[in-house]
Image 1 (cartoon, rainbow, N blue to C red):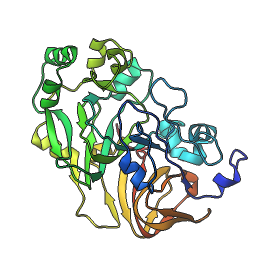
Image 2: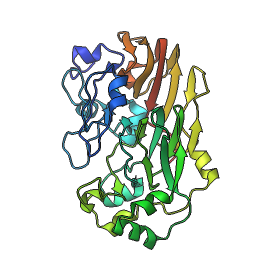
Image 3: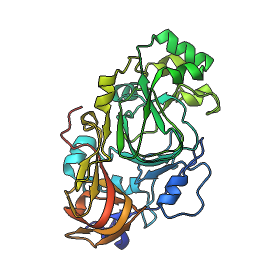
Length: 349
């Protein structure tokens, strides 16, 4: 094994990581703190970036995860991509993990926003990746936990431009599909789809590894329009918006209800998410094939066992990164976890 690894990292089959909550513009995160065992939580820490090699937009280090030996995970992956990601992944995606995982819970409704596609990001933001995402709802509070996804009806470009120019929050939010959510629900959010999450909705969020957001409803949330549009002019930024209406049939293809499924392995995401990321809910004794991955323990205690590395104890609130080189592993004990992975190297896009 390369000397790049410290003994602490190389001895483990999976590597437990602490909370990583870069400051955001909105409040939240009480459920993250509760999941991790209690204590005080950062007032502006509603997002926990788990095993992140992605920085916040325009920042050099904010958002990155540190390994136990003090290195940034990003730097460790860049130094030995095959060890962390596997040769097939590297051939397809280079030294990018092709994945960003977050825990997220807001005390307030998030502003309506959307994210660029791969093509737009390549043309305007110098990035291979846009920001398709998906939500795994793991908790809710309040009387009406909801999310908002896509326009109900087709909207003309001049109408969107007018709403944004006048910051007509009522019109923007009122034009979207309002979706009641409960734990076990999952929502796929294709790039370009305007969306928002209501207060008290606690999710695991899988994303492509960028921090690109076009914030349509920025007044009262962000300092100015420039920060809402990633420094682009308004017209260019609004090219990201999918203005097509999303009907019930399309919504049904994006949303899954998995709360009542009790198998050892429950695939969580809509079929359309497969080219971007994978997520399963695992319970009990489950085999894991070799892959870079992120594990978030929702309940119980147990361990992850590998053939070549040390057994690693896990419990409710543990978050861990798994390198490809750990090989085939097995979860054991009374654990309920969400296992997040990048797309398979052969996934069509």
